Image 1 (tube, helix red, strand yellow):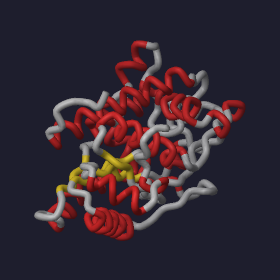
Image 2 (tube, helix red, strand yellow):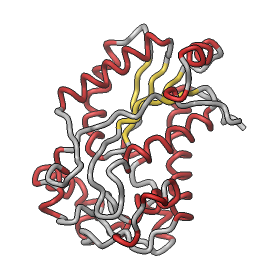
Image 3 (cartoon, helix red, strand yellow):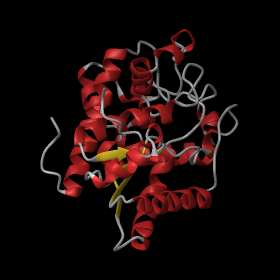
Image 4 (tube, one colour):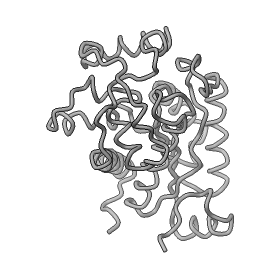
Length: 264
């Protein structure tokens, strides 16, 4: 039986023993519950967050995974049924109180990252402030989104998948990963092209495109909620995309914590 790494699957005694045995680092993923087009479930970002964090924990070896935080900052998806959002003040309070609970549990290192694009700017802005409040008790840090977000672009380009098709929300990339992780709830019979304008996804335009989407709402830019084109998605590609993301996140976490090598 595989060693448990998800805290919510463990008893308090198991968690206490794990921290005594040297598992002093915990991963916190900020996810979301929001629309993901006509073909993916609203739990997509949460599912991806768990999958990546669990694989990172097993690869690093001295790490547990806290329950994924959700809802998140998803105001730009409101207007689609099933989308939830919280205010920025609520989101930051949850982050702080998560850290307080984890520090009291005995963790010395708390790594926070996001599986949802709408949370990323807030993490970059507020995690340093939260970290200051825990100085001397624990080290709290976040991985900059540009280090692990869109890391699949080169791999997909080699397979002939453009940035516009890969998309940033419910497009080819996320659909491939969900086909690998949860094919039973991935409705490829309902998959359809969304906003897949090449200009929108070019690196030079991406910040402007993101700002427009966050300001106007996704529905104004893409009535079906898809930013990309999920058609033709593959579970095999999804497996590779997750592996690429996990490898990069582990490298970043290891460098931050001076973890010398992977667990075999």
